[in-house]
Image 1: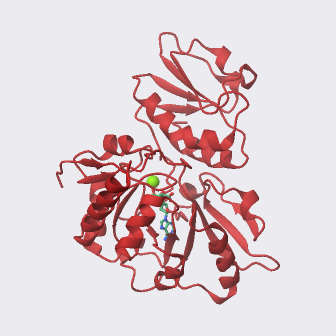
Image 2: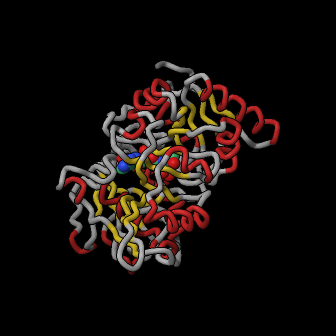
Length: 346
Ligand code: TXA
Ligand code: MG
């Protein structure tokens, strides 16, 4: 598994052409390659080749019970990898028309052609068509479904730049395609669809960049409660364990500013939403470091884009603890709070 990890740039058309060709050659040879998507960087392999897919699990130290997302080069290929039940066919067509390419992943019954290792033996497959132009070119040139989870070590912070992938997977992957910073910055919204009586029901298995405001035009949106997946031991998304997205430095989400009591001599870093004293945290301690997700008025898409980047930065500062302020649970704030709760030690 030892590799010399190279980074291929895509600043010019000539570089992009070469990077795409190298990525496709690796995929065709049953290898792995890290690729940019609009959400976070992914670690890609030929979804139809079980040995290639096994290399993803090995490189990430990912347990085999945690299934992978399948990326399609084009929307219409959905029917080659998934069965779309009659009673949700209409809404699936609406959703894919509206949101693909984009940060929406659908859980659907799988077709037998998808190897069991991809879905961890589950009868369903998670499918999406991503919107990153470089990944789009790789997927189209390859022409077949690609399995790609986030390109981090299992349980760690998702990478939103090529440099972050390098930190995570140096020596474990031969090539990283550098497509710049991810424009969304949080993993795709994953939903499971039920027919419902009047309207289809969207069970949000993982909150993401696509918010309920956007989804609710097509159905009723329901969120899973945090920790449901741990308590009932049969998680809807097996990868959504309680501890996930975690920095190496202990992180604590404090939902009540008044309850923070700093211990003397400890170096604390603050992860703040707006950096505003009204949020109650900035003034409560002599912070060793402060990082702000969306300075000033606080804008969710900006906070989303910067979230993993800033978390990774704080994690590199040798702090004793990272204290995270809550963000409002609306739009992408829901996805950020979900990641913070899973990253938090208590
Ligand atoms: O934005 C994204 O979705 C990124 C980019 C690279 O596409 N990918 C990503 O993959 O976040 P990953 O593996 O880090 O997270 C996928 C989640 C995991 O929690 C996994 O358990 C869940 O999706 N999942 C995948 N297939 C599933 C299935 N058949 N049933 C339930 N959950 C599934
Ligand atoms: Mg992940």
